[in-house]
Image: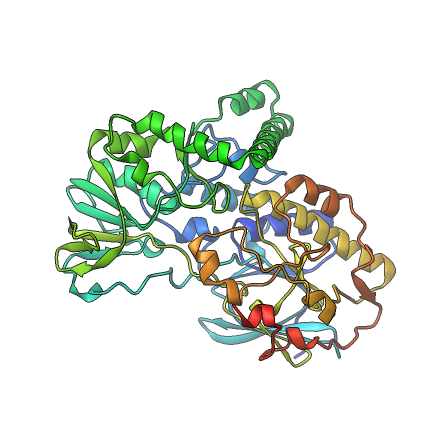
Length: 507
């Protein structure tokens, strides 16, 4: 039997993948496509994470899709509502029947001889092969199988319960428990107030502090705009209000980053000063604002839990786990019966698959990013990744629009292949700076795709810039190379597996 050949394969049925599929169906209705999802359900992150209190860390007026209004009152939303929003989008647009669940991609191989990607997938019925002309990567950026867990000494000595938030046991009852949460990111600051509602006591154990800001969970002005201007108009106004406010705030703080630091720490002082002893130790980060994601605390719930005495923070290094808790290097013993390891993600840029192009192994750490949506010299592939300083979906929407324009442009001109060619000279201009210093990023730096120092290889975290470049910019921008007949691809030495320039090898 002839093998199935699709126009497009989308990998991932989470927030990104469903959004991309909707754009593709509406803007390129003649294209045949399917969505591959390794799990049994729609939702991605918002179906995987089920820990108590899970919520968005961005405003849903911007983390929601541009085409589908967010209707709930809460803009900092509960996780199950986001999952339902994604599911509803799939149903409304007839996407659910196009999803092939429990399809884990093992390998993706591109061959210029037939201008096709061949994907081998593991399914409950065994391995299956699917071929496609174009590949859309929307599988996220971290490993679903496991989260990051430091090698704590004495890990096996602890006699209580150890939980990683990425795999929260649904039968665990935290009422009356004494709980330690290890971590200082969004997951930790979400769990602390939620668990503190019924737990006997909660202790957040952090190696170093994070910038944390209070924000109302309900966007009053956004809801007013939606009420006065029903439908897409009010939602669009609410959305742009958040976009402009965020852009102005970042521009203002960029002019005086030290003032931004003082303001953020000072706002915490207004919440805790005089009520929580030594609060400065726990809320004065060593890094500058926006070198890591800013944690949002809706309605100040975390600070309320700290003021009440039902929760506390311990800052310092962990010496080891003990049978009854955690021993800090300063000698303090944190006595608990449950330890939650909110210690972060383990990045995985290709979703765990093996990738080849014309017999050449593609390694994530040796890739150069083109406009943060394609990889140098990799044909007929677009990837979807969001911002670190704004809502994830803002970037995904823009890239999805660009991808649809790209497909139409290729059809009009009879092109079979597109790639962003890069030479050794381009790879010599890799940006080795580290503007974003979150632990999960630094741990994976050597095996993560690289940004250049010049356009179009420069990865900008700027929505207004990307809107201009991706929505209104030319498809044939002078960098992309198009071919009516697929051409064999040869990687420069810096991109070849087992070889890397000095900047990469040094990492």
